[in-house]
Amino acid sequence: MAALIQSALVVGGGFSGMSAAIELRKRGIAVDLVEIDPHWRNYGAGISIGGPTLRAFRTLGILERFLDEGYACDGLDIFSPEGVLLTQVPTPRIAGDEVPGSGAVMRPVLAKILADATRASGTDVRLGCTVSALEQDADGVTVDFSDGSRGRYDLLIGADGLYSGLRERLLPDAPKPRYSGQGVWRAVLPRPASVTRTMLWVGNHLKIGLNPVSRDEMYLFVNEDRPVNDLVPPEEFLTRLKALLDPFTAPEVRNARAMLDEHSLVIFRPLEGLLVEQPWYRGRTVLIGDAVHATTPHLASGACIGIEDAIVLAEELENASSLTAALESFQQRRWERCRLVVENSMRLGEIEINGGDKAEHMRIMHASFAALAQPI
Image (cartoon, rainbow, N blue to C red):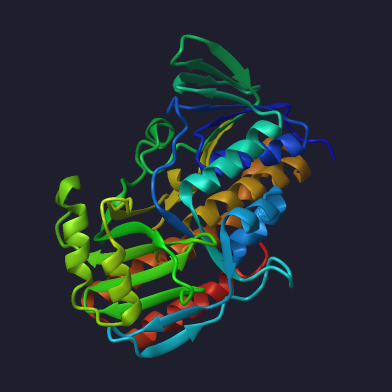
């Protein structure tokens, strides 16, 4: 069946926006993508990748390149601060029998993979540009751009992130991003041969992880309870991160601490979340990704559910009988899955902050991964 629309504007060149452009172009839809950053940068160290994300990569057509430039593995090990194994969490091979169930990649590497695929799809990418005004009618959306130009489209897709300007315009009563009470530290380090899959060490008010991101590198991440979301001066990042690792005596953590230096790309950010009640669309404008369901990283699924949004939206535009029906079906397919990720991730953080029931923590992780393994 022919798609319901002939043209679309994607606002935001992050993972969700690029994925939407790729999937719409597969269906013959003309796509413009605008990204406000003139350099199309993606900040950060590593990003953990689960089996559902790998399945989405296969749909997008980037799985082989990810497997070549990132790192894929099976399973997750959780330890005490001293290195005693507490539990092992399986990661089913849901992207195919030959594809490991999880992995990780450097964020800029994944961004480059998706950017290359976006350009190769025939999407018209415009950098240093965003929407300054829009007007909708029954037949389309007229857009004024920040560079002074104007365009008209059948559909506008807002993928402009946690602090979405389009959300503010379309859904002024939507909730604001909520600070979770935790912050995350990340750094990039050489990968020892002993680190072959994700490893977590869980202490009081602190969780440390190591995850391979390539054949030669891994990233270190530390979730820290921080009751107050105060500013951390960048010049203190390295010293503070090393101090956080001091109480952990597990050999792998001690080794990671010893390798930290000014070349480790240490970064810090507060963890925030957001879940917007439906509807996620108004007329011919729809929001996807972090603009409507931003999550903390406890289930390593934030990028996944945003990319899945793009895939499902494109499918519904291809198969539904009307645009309204497509957007309604998109919402119905996405709500429970996105709610689960946002709310369960928040709950995992609460348990860590409050020193809560570790058995509940494990149950939530196992149940969440099982649910996410289901078809989208």
